[in-house]
Length: 215
Image: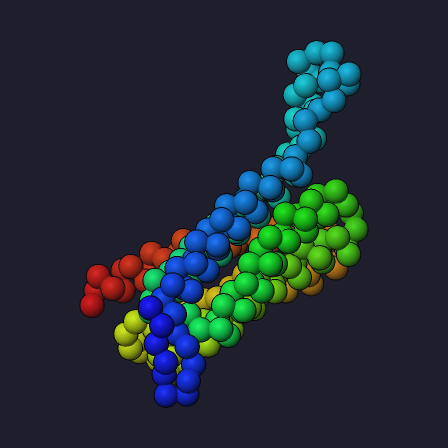
């Protein structure tokens, strides 16, 4: 269903449905590809249960990064789903912004592998943090474009609510910046601040639900 607004911008519901389905596929694929960073111990190096346990224990840091990145992608997907539900359609600008964001989502498994392969190198950790920062930044601008004057929204929402969603989209980029600074001094703990992502997201979700019930 196509609709022309006064400024001759085409808003299409089918475009929104297509970009949403594409986002689901790319997020799911990226989450699955994170497993490629985890290596099984070589068979020739294992001759006892003790050596097998030791081999798995060596993978614990990589497993931690996998879980952290998986949760990070899950939070980005949940936020993307929450914002698209408020929209009536998409225009060309939104489509390009969302496609650019999804390009960096697809790139995150590579950044994750780079960070796990070279944990002692700051440049490898920086690539991961910058990747996370770019995803969140583009998501922010995509939402600002969609919500400006209710441009792509199904119905009017209060400016305060739209601003809260905008502010919330900066949580992951802000943590990425903190990680960059933290990693400059303690490179082996660069990704530690990302543990805050599910905690902050969970607390904020509970707070929003509680506020809605109060109203």
